[in-house]
Image 1 (cartoon, rainbow, N blue to C red):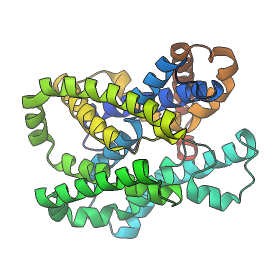
Image 2 (cartoon, rainbow, N blue to C red):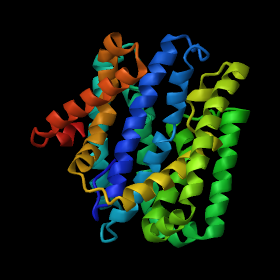
Image 3 (cartoon, helix red, strand yellow):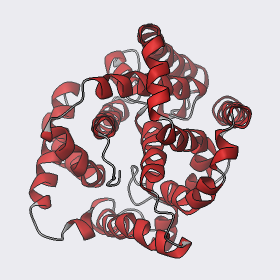
Image 4 (cartoon, rainbow, N blue to C red):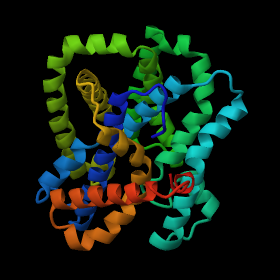
Length: 332
């Protein structure tokens, strides 16, 4: 979600892939909501929704990767915060105001509380959690050797699995979203840091198991689909299929990200459009819900058309906005 040097083109492709998946989640979610969660009649919509559940965990992994890749150890902590937070905090406040004042005006909570929780619009919860990780990153970087130790990494992974199981199966944690999501996403963020320092070694490992990853990814897609649907009919809790913080989704994200990372790196993607779409993805993240609200009455009857419309218009608007000098400092 942020600019990076040195430039890794495969990360551009993964970021673009992820933002498209975010849009797919939200367009199909709107269909499921308006159907009254008739999952039997809207099975294909649910399948697309579950197929895309890797999006947010992968964004956290990418964020850890990019932060580690670009970390300037010459900066003191406050200089680091100023450099990083300015890129994300100003656009976040701006778009939170837009959603609060003009889009979801029925939200009458205190605006400061809304900023802290990311509740001005349903996609914005991601940002406060990301800010937590930004704040903690220099400490994680400092203790990289400890975190990258295979034993410690295994403990962190097992702990993450336990937390996800408790939240999804036993009882959802009663924390505000930024705290809850950070508890459920810390492992993929740390893993992104580790991958950034071991890119070539990891690609070598993936190359040896790539043909195993394909059926694993396929199996996990259908498992997640059936898991969400079956659990919903048992609990009638929409978090059964809305949640991406499940053990199954964690494994799905890691398997799919590994496969795509290998493919995108091997193909040496040189297309300028990939780089351009990646740069636009941050603004698309903010604006696509507004586009969704506008286009839903016209294109909402067909999942694919609706998704394509929201994606195309969002990237189009973001591209036009990118041509206005310095606007990105405000809008992202």
